[in-house]
Every structure is written in C-alpha cells, then in structure tokens.
Image (cartoon, rainbow, N blue to C red; front, side):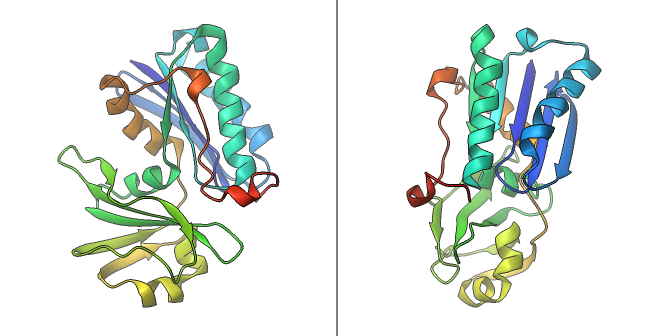
Length: 224
C-alpha cells in the first residue's frame, strides 16, 4: 500500500509518504510559503522512494478546519495529483490529525487551533482500541469561552489555540487537564496514521468529491 499525505491548514506545511508501513516525511513551519513548499516536498518524497504519482493507491489530505488559504491549497494540490490517474483521496480532519500526534501519550485530547478573530477551531478526541483518535463531539469554530466540555476523564490540550487563549481555555475547561502543547501543528505524518485504516475500510472517495472544511463560512471569500 502506497499513500501520500499533505497538510497545509495551519502555519506548518508537511508531506508524508507511506509505503508498506514505512513512512518518510517533510515538515516545515513557514507561514504564507505553503504554495512554494508543498510541491517540492512531494517531489522529494517520490524521488526518495523511487515511485511516481501513478503508483499511489491513495492521496490523503488535511481538509481543515484551518486557514482558508491553506485548506484551499491542500484541495487544489490533491486534485492536481489525483485527477490524472483517477487516484482516490482520503480527507482527514486537521483537528483529528493534531490529536493523533499525542495518541501514544494521552487517551483524550482537546484540539484547539487559533482561528483568529478571537475564535478557535475546537474538537474533542478519544483514543480507540487501535490507538486512533476518534472525534467524540462535533467540531466547531467558537470563542474560547464557549467550548464544548467533555463529561469526564483526564485530557491533554493540543494546538495553537492553547497558546493564544491558554487562560481562557483553562478557566472554561471543567475536566482534569494534564497539560497542553500550544506549539503543536497538524502534520502529514499523523494524517497518514489516520488515512491507512480509512483506506483499508473503503473510505477513500473520488477526487471530484474532495471538499475543504472551513467551519467559518463568513471568511470563505478572504484569506484567514
């Protein structure tokens, strides 16, 4: 199985390539440079693995939520790669990928990405028996003082929202918080982890059905 993944929804730009459970990846935090970085990253991975896009079984991507421009870049790139060979695609929540990064250490993660305009993209995730983070509440964009709190258990916070609004989130968070990492970003490597079982379960979709998730519709006509 050969799966390529990209993630460009936040300040971080990344690409990963998994071939038969061996993963290579590129990751760089570089705001506003995703357009110039992502295709060279993909080319480097394909050359390193000595394969071409036609050899891929699927292409996974972070579908957001995140910066409008970044999410749009991801959809545009996977469309350009997948259309030529009718390669199926696998959309993965960027908030879910962010939570997956901490699955080895924590069983429940509260993901928060700074959405600007005094808001965050918010989602709660719980690890299943396979070690995969699964969404347990609907993802939303909201004020950090209007988060959806979990009912029980110990939690870990992940994402830039925890840096920007650490005091507000901690004040609103009812359950035990085992700390947070506000410097973490969703990455293509974690997209891969979630995409592989999705592909095996038959959840890949035709590329023409690939759509971004913005959550905040009112910024659909401008960059965030």
